[in-house]
Image (cartoon, rainbow, N blue to C red; front, top):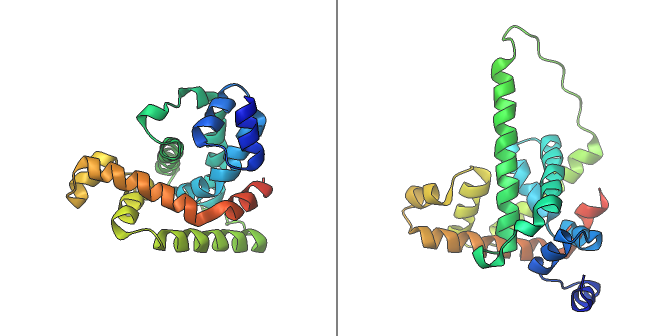
Length: 200
């Protein structure tokens, strides 16, 4: 990482594009910083899409492995880093959901269901707190932006499908998604990101 990027990282204010550029060069410090910044947001998106905390955590690891391998593919001229990361997470979650649904369809109908393992109280409390935190953050976002985020990252619709669903121009939908994700990150804040990283 350059001296300028290092100084920004030490000050705690590196740009997303700079972090991804450093990650593409194998910089683990930048990778950790990106994880701290975005793991809670991406975990919230994954949990909503998959409806299962364990599956969401597994996919989150796959997402960051892909980010480590593909960071060099990010092109800041085509959009913001946050949208690129969220798209990776969304695609991974939809792939996992498709796999889960296929597995359920192929399972013998007569096979008795295995008893569910009780959820650990600490995990349950953490999950509930993160859900409340994400819900509060979403509530701070204007309705139009929140609707686009919910349809895109929680219901799995493409931006074109959202534009048709809500009756808005595609460019407006893209703008709502970009601004909404930025505001979501700002509302969740650094403390949430730090908390998410320390549990890893």
